[in-house]
Structure formats: structure tokens, C-alpha cells
Image (cartoon, rainbow, N blue to C red; front, top):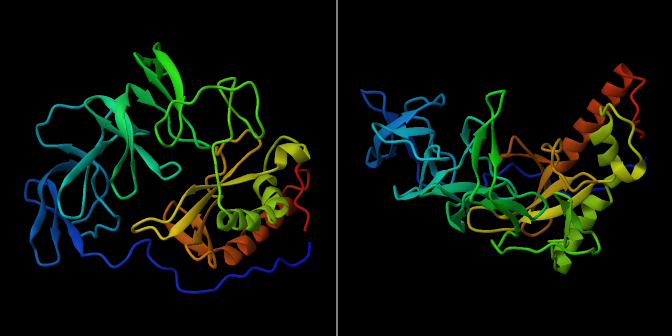
Length: 319
């Protein structure tokens, strides 16, 4: 493989946002948690019983304040977990309960709960899609499935599944999208086809071209440890811009999808490109930025190591 030339400036890794007021969590004598500013002024009173590991004086690092638990003495709200406030102490929303905690951000949006209904908020805490449905899936490849009149049912293994109701599909504007008989790059959801959901200007197309040029090597890295033999078509990756620059987030976020247009198993193949398009990073652990060239070199070494240790691997990494 010829050495890839990357037009990337190696600069110190910066925070996602501009300089913010210093806020700190504090723990009261009765082990409830609140937030103060650097001068000791209480921004959010100590009202919350927290279930995550949190130390007294720990910094609030995100664009919003998150309390991972419940208010003391409150009645539980269906599907809700925790509380989110803005950095001035104003209540914003309650996250959807998922995987023993607050829902994750997916394609820049997180599920929220209001009066038992589910909607979405962005990373700045702004309600992006109003909470109007009984259940909504996370966004994947520009779409989310929703249902009305459905409910949770406990299965034999103590997990829960959604049953009943009327189902549909929404786009990132919250609009209901109808299936089509077929279209270029159609997306399959539950056996039905939906139109390709992304639109790009010339600058954004140029950003995606950078990743398309890396498709072969990224595919080899991604599938070197996959246990089933995949065809060239099945190994092809798809790159889409799922978030654009906004206040406190001066980046384009690019997610990677497999041939099924699913993100599953590709969580470490997320990337950020600076607003001016000059700096490219791999996004690790959802918030840490690693310069793309450094990340790629490390991934190549890991792929080569795996292949040496597993010479019978069905999907070869070829340099």
C-alpha cells in the first residue's frame, strides 16, 4: 500500500467547546449531589441521589449538567433516568432510561422523556424533536423507528421488549417518512425500503471524499478480526456526516456504517473534521480526539499484530 498523504495539522487537542465557567459537583452531608461555581455559589441545589462514581469537587466537563440518579423522595417517572440542567442551573430534560443509565447520544441526538413520551435533545440540551411517541429507537443512518400505543413486556430472561402499537419511521426533523418501492442507496428498515436520507454541499462532499479514499484500508482494519469470511461488497464501508458545527461543537462528525447501513460493531470508527476542513480526528470513547494519522498508524499496527497471532483469519489485512 502506498503511503497515504494526509493534509492534517498536528495541533494540541482542544476541548469541544470554548472556555466555560468552572462548575463543580458537590456532595452534601446527607450524600446528595448538587453543583456550585468556582466562587461557591450554588447553581443547582443538592437534591440528587447519584448512582455513578462521583467525587466531591469533580468538574462539570460537558455542555450540560447531568445528575445520574433521582431526586430524593420523588416518584419514578416511566422510562426516565436522571436529570439534565444547563450551566446556569435551568432544568432542561430527563434522559430516556437505557442500558442501566441515561441514553447515549447517537448521531448527535439523545432520547428524552416528558410525561412518559419520548423525544430527542441535542448535545447542548436543546429539545430537537418533541416528546410525542410512546417509544422511539436511537437514530441510525438518519432514521429512527417509533411506535404509539405500545408498551414494555418482560421476557423470560428478565429483559424487556416493546410489544403492540402502531409503528412508523421518522427522519432527524421528526417527520414521518413513508417507505418506497426502491431508490438509489435505499435504506432497509424492518424489511421496508426508505429513501437515502443525507444531503451534502460541495464542502461536505469533499470531507467525505477524504474517507472514501481510505475505504480499503479502513475496511481491512475493521474486519481483520471478523470471524466470518466477507465478500468485497460486504466489507465496503459507508461514511456519512451525522452532525454539523454548532455552538460548543465546531466539528463535522462522520460515522461509519457497514453494508447493511448499520453502525453496530463500528463504534470506534467515528471521526471529527474541524469546521474549516483542515484537521481530522478519530473520536474515541465518545469525547476524546486523536489525530487521524496517529490513530490510523496505531490501528494498522493492531491489525498486523492480530493477523500474526491469528494467521487463519478469513478477512486478510493487506498493506
